[in-house]
Length: 368
Ligand code: NAI
Ligand code: MG
Image (cartoon, rainbow, N blue to C red; front, side, top):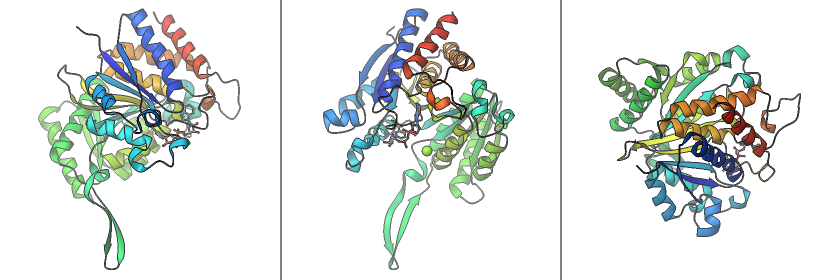
């Protein structure tokens, strides 16, 4: 059988810096665990614009459709801020999500014990936290029509439309229930069924998919505004949260910050299964290209490395190896190794991007 394939799109700013450390870890898995990947690389974002005059070449898009997983760094930067909207670096990312139809966005909020002091919440509220927010990514109010700014009764009116079809809700609900089965077996669905018809349909459909296909998973429903409060009050009550595009955008950012730095946050975006049974998939850190620290060797590579761990788990069925990588990171943090973004006000000596990567490889070696 052919080796599983990965397309690396490192992008701009710190993207290539953090991705360099991921590449070393991919090689480690080939050398030490016999997990050999066919890795190819291409351009996205400003880096692609510089060469092709657009943020994602058609050939790159075609490659992304064929591989088992895309690993993306970050796109954007001040150099591209004044470009026309149609060729902005972010458009490359949006095109990938749209054409691969990546409808299920997985955003874990996981607190490494060594960083529990770093949270803005009390230590016992976040220590050991491990929740997963599943955000619907390809529909809802960001895509629904009618949309636009119109003239009405002599004044302008801005319109966006929250719109969900049953099948759109069904597929993201299934993805949440499947995840829950591999985790804590608990799903909380969030909408505003009290004031929105799309929320009424959402609740109905999630409940039906549960009753018909996943009765063994514990399901609860919560209004999204209460969900926001509960996330900050006692986040450990949750395992998997499933919600729409807009609420998911906000709730996942809120949940993410429970655990500390942007430099620690991975994500996965999954679509429908391909012929080989693997889902269409793209993995990327939540952070951007961080122009303020780009080129200085200061970036924390952990968000991007944890994104690769998600690829091991969700694309390549290597959950044990994903756990090995997460444990290696935990070990390094417990040893007090910190990039600059993980330093508290008391200061200390920060390691570089490359040093952090090397420490994680050392910990991987020690795990054998
Ligand atoms: P950002 O995430 O790039 O940076 C926000 C702050 O967090 C900065 O101070 C940065 O230094 C820090 N930071 C981010 N990642 C870090 C890491 N791995 N290690 C240490 N510190 C880290 O967001 P910002 O500044 O709003 O946007 C910068 C550029 O990135 C813009 O062009 C924006 O459009 C783009 N962007 C791209 C995203 C993507 O590719 N998915 C997501 C967000 C922004
Ligand atoms: Mg957001």
